[in-house]
Structures are given as C-alpha cells and as structure tokens.
Image 1 (cartoon, rainbow, N blue to C red):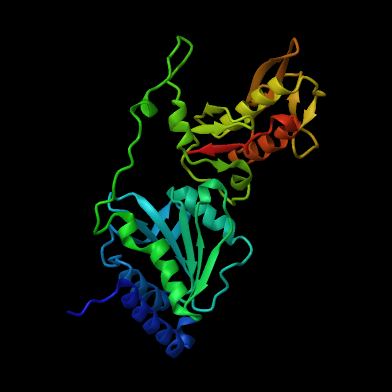
Image 2 (cartoon, rainbow, N blue to C red; image 1 turned 180 degrees about the vertical axis):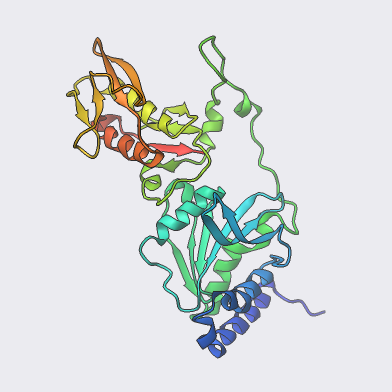
Amino acid sequence: MSVTSPLASLYTVLQAVRTSAGLNAPLLRKNEAATRAALIDPVLRALGWDTANVQMVEPEKTIGGDLRVDYLLRDSTGKPHLVIEAKCLDASLDKHGYVSKVLGYALGFKVQTVFITDGLSWHCYSNLHKGNTEAITFSLADDLLPAALHLIQWLDAAQSGYGVALPVPAVPEAAFIPSVVTKDDKQPKLHKAVVEQTDFVELTHLNMLPSLPEHKPKLLRLPDGSVADLKTWKGILHKVGEFVLAQNPVITFPYPDRAGKKTALLSLQKPTAGLSSSAFSHQGKTVFLHTNYSASACIANALYLLNLVPTSLQQVSPAVAF
C-alpha cells in the first residue's frame, strides 16, 4: 500500500510554484492578480484552504471603508483567523510602514497572525496583539523543506478547525462570574480571570498606526497592572489622567499637551466652554484635563501624560483590548 506524506505533497506543490515563478517572472513582477493565482492560491489549497469557498477564504476583504486585505482566512466557526497581504513577485516586503500596516490588519480584523508574500518570499507576523513586530521570514527560492515546515506550522487549515475536531479548552466557570455590583456601578466589571485571558494591544503600537480601527476599545490596562472599562477613545485619556493624578502628587500646572504650545493638558482653569474636559480632585484642588482631541491625539497625549508616572509604578506597558 502506497502512503503519501502530507509534507511530501506540499513539497511537490512548492516545487511547482517555484518553477512557475521562474517561467513567468516577467508577468508576475508587474501583475499581483497573476501572482496570487499562480503562486499563492496553489499553496493555500495544498494547505487545506478551499480558495473557491468565500466563506473560508474571503478575497479583497474590506473593513471600515479603507482597510482592505487580499485574503481573510476564517476558521471553521467563521471567525477571522489569518490575514494574507499579496504583492507582485520580487516586490519588497519590508518597506517602511509595512509593520504598522500589518498591525492595523491584526487590530481591524482581530487576528493574531498576518502574512505578507510575493509568492516566493513569506513574512509572518504572529502574536501581534501582544506587541510582537518581528517577522519570521522564509523563501521558496531557498531550501524547500524548511519553508514547507513553516507553512504547515503557521498556515495549515487543520489548525483552524478544518478536517479535525479541535478540543475546546476548559475555562473555569468562575472566569465568567462578574464581580459584585454596587449602586455606583453602571455595569458589572470583568472577573480577573477573564482579564488575564484577554489580548491587549500596547498604546505605543496603536500610536504607530496611520489610522485606528473603527471598533471602540473596551478595556485599558494601566502601568500598575490594573484594568479599567472603556467606552470611547477619549476614555483612554480620561483614565490615564485620573491614574497619573492619583500617583503623582507633585505636578506643575498648567501642564502643556504634547504639542507644547497653546493647549494645557492639565490646568487649574476650566477649558473654554464647548471644549470637552474631565475634572479631578488633586491635592485639595480641582484639576481639569483637556480631552477635546481626536482619537489618535488622545492616545498620543495619554502616552505623553504617562511620563509623569514614577518609574517604580510602571510594572506593565499601558495597553487596550477590543
């Protein structure tokens, strides 16, 4: 009885893809659609992805009007799982700004892993929600065996639940029990066990993005490890301001915003009518936090304000969860 190894089958496909790249290089270098059809789609199919099933492999997926990816791969439950950005053959995969772009994809589509490929070279960014921006790179132009192993490790459809029954990890019932709600609480706070399993994105990485995802942040992790509920982007600046004032008793007012010119981020004077602000009690005085900023400016000013937090209290990187 003849038995075919899955790795050997993939290896054969990769050989054919490499040959096709060499024979059709002039066309593939200037035609992304041809690159996808000749070099990328065969690899996906060999890894168990049905490229004709748009519920499994959705091409040209758009979110928020301006965030578009070439392939959105969904797991067996329909949840976005992987993103692949395709380029023409021999295109540069590490141009300035690509890291921010793939991080934007991860945030926008709520995935952990993003690939950029020209059909031969593959750059894999994984654990993006945890702030990792280092790519794992491999190429079909080199030894095919390591490339095949990498592809199986990161892209095999079985890992997304296709063709196998993946075990559901047991989660203690207590992890979903809300804490006690007092009369001052508008909604139950997440139990600590849930917070620990949540993927957070560091504010510094959000600050790198050219545009923020449309969905609102839900949790803010502060430098001391505590977690606060969020409803808006401005809530990030509000919570950071509250935290900073509580941790630093010696602040000079007015404290200018990051632009350092006209606007006071913290002031003893209430901002002009019509401008949004938050009021806090600090050392027996009322301090006003200017919050009349765009979402991206709120993040930038929150990071700037966190410079006032004593180093001894900076145990973790401030981050948000969606």
